[in-house]
Length: 102
Image (cartoon, rainbow, N blue to C red; front, top):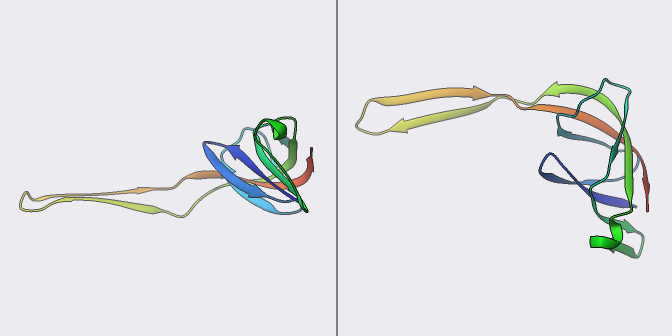
């Protein structure tokens, strides 16, 4: 069984027992979190999607907060003596998926 959820403007495929890194969520490690925006649920041969999956819920618990790897942003214009380097690290929350209910 797995589900497709949307959080932070991105979609994730999740299954019970696995950990997924999503955009930062409020809450301390150990706190429970529920994802209401479930796009699809697949249970063996049965696929529930669209408005039929609107009643489904995905519950999990926050394992940790962290920051991703550094991304280098380099801007350059030739013949103009213009160079600019910036680094960026995106915050994330690691969530362990506990259950999927339809």
